[in-house]
Image (cartoon, rainbow, N blue to C red):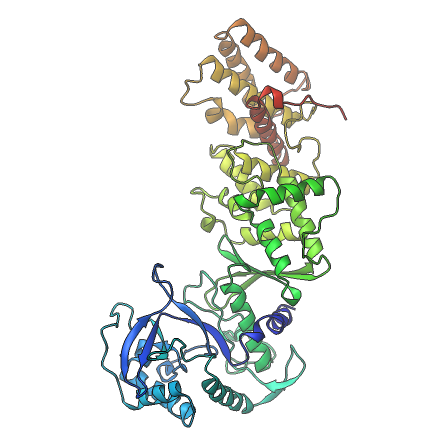
Length: 566
């Protein structure tokens, strides 16, 4: 299903700009040649304001790339590194000459003749434009002096020469029935590598044969093709996937994983809406607010230009040592994926300060809250893909996310809006909680863990008021973890301390906090108000009660709503 979907993506979008035998590749420099093939200059390509400037072109495909002990004998047509193009390695320059000479023979193009003459003249002298630091590793293309175009797909005569050579290469060898298209085609021995961010060796294949005997299937060996796949299909899926990974509009980083997504028939509207819905930015807040209000009111949601019935595809990939790992692949109608995303954001909605940048936290921000240094790149393996998959499918959230957030709270971190939103969403989806998972304080709730969390917040606020706000640490720093997990061991002590704190207040303040304490204690069982231990879900209710009460204290009186009995 993955390969078939990528092949269709290639047919819908990529094939027009990247036909079979070609691929998008970047180059850093252009070798400027005279009509006689003399190297006159080396020109920097791309935006020179960037750290590593380069420019992308449609160039002849390099297939699976170079590998093995004789890799130096494999040159690339029209674009390669300095060892092949500039003769920094004489052996490799000779390999490039042997490739270009027969392919360009008789090609009626000034640039083709100049390239042929360049290789025929032997290793050139390096002009002043040569960068010694980048020279061997940088990729070079050819251009004619006085012309802007380089030797790539845009040169009609060179294109014909390469297409003819590529077709001849495909025609030889075994013919098979392609398992993707069902058509007869030449078998693809080695599949093109994928440019996935995070891969230590720059590129890795998605499909490859493992060298270990224990991993062989049906008697296949490492000398056999990794899949009975035709050359057209193998080229198409790799071209489509590399195109999606290069696009800034079809790719997102989820911790160490990478998500690529696309709509059938090249639906740009669906891809754009998914992009800002799944990874909202500050400037998208107004659009998201309108959508959430319509969703909360039960009104239909159909962003302009989107087709709810069209198929939408999501592929989550992870770098690996031998080949790329697939975390998940999900294909559903865009309308269903849109609805699941909106329902997720509604579950995550919670009261908070106006200073928060994200009212609807993006995935990377949620994941960063599970780490010590607040860096999404340090998220536990697999968690990013699991969390995203739960959002897309509308399934339960991974308990590892919930436990990680609780872990950071127990470690003494501030219970901010994002942490509280995650706890609220998990309680709704995984524990079917509805009473305490309101956006703001539910003062009418008698849920014991929730009430205990509120009571702890009241006792902390009382301590702060009694000290005039001049405190280096509060009872939260010392007692919160124990109170959340084992209330019975902590709350009697906290209530005793509260009498000393209240005695430092004026009469009005003392009455106010005593009234709050009495109200909350009245909601608890008189015989056993403080349980000895709380389960994981009840710990979440405790934290929500604490957060809601703390937010209520800082809500202006004019914005506070009286609790309504249901």
